[in-house]
Image 1 (cartoon, helix red, strand yellow):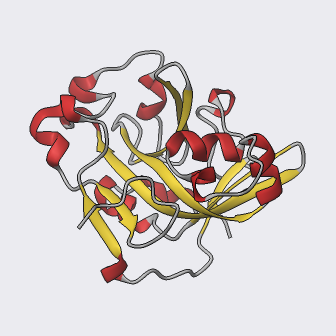
Image 2: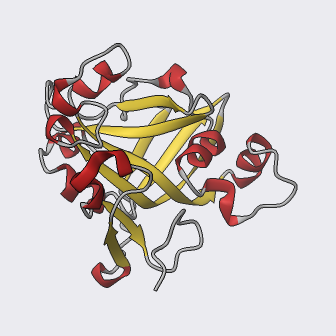
Length: 201
């Protein structure tokens, strides 16, 4: 069953980023369904978060999607190369978003393999946000699409990941955010091979 729109409208973006661990993410393009369960996320807390695109109330043609009612996709281009999928949360006007950094693929691996142009399937097929989007066929063409659509959606399939296996850590690549770069807003499954940057002991 698809997650209801109300699920995304909590104003606790950090709590939702953690809760999304173990939820399933699916796409359907040209009749081909691909997906898996989420194993790594990052929360971005809107106008007060120096790491967020919407910090300070920044509202541009790119970031305007973040200001929509929670339950839509925010897809943007990073470094002119990688498409990045974010889940918009909270209510209209409060630009919270959660970056999907990694999934454990479970469905349509052959399709993902072709999209990633990989001779054999390796963990990096969906390791890191750019890889997730490419493997699932996600591009800016679906920016602002509802997460209850038949193209892009999330489901709760009852997968339970132990609290002790979910690690909270600082986000990746946001050194520009000063003290906010140290906030434990990244969540990942300990020991999962698809996690992009596991914390080293």
